[in-house]
Image (cartoon, rainbow, N blue to C red; front, side):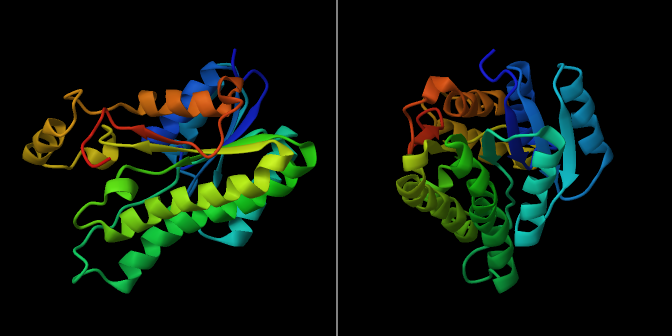
Length: 248
């Protein structure tokens, strides 16, 4: 098992890509601390699914855009699990609009949940990882943060910011063997893409040389590579997980 007896924090893991990462890591023996915005039946179901894989798992209600909430999340994880090895910054939202119509609230909500959360969670785990002299952090960005997308200026800015943050952070953290890498997915089939019109989905797929969308499991496998010893000499990477999508 690649992550036997490790402990990972995964933000936004009650559904979609985050849930897939949690389940994939659990299959490799990793104990999972994860969060959502509130305690819900969905969170309890993920806890049950993870426990059935033979690992310890607990979900927490966390506001990832709030400093005190993220600090408490990490503290609770350390109290409940005893140690911490991995952080997956996956939480994020979209709130699309053309620039001329985008409200300040739409801008702030996406920047706070998608970008500020990465800063706050990294800052919260850094003392523990720094003291122990190791750790792996994987940040989920997007090809939209690389190539842009009309109607998603806030989302693109946040996802591009994650890449810039990572490139800077590795220069501070590497001396203590703390690795940080980015996975930038393209068109992945999740609940978030479920409401996209079929005509638009078809158009997107014509821009993908592999002629299909990706799956949450494929994103999870990329995260597993970086989180485990398979990626022990990788830091500051940006993996374009997009099937070769144009402009990615």
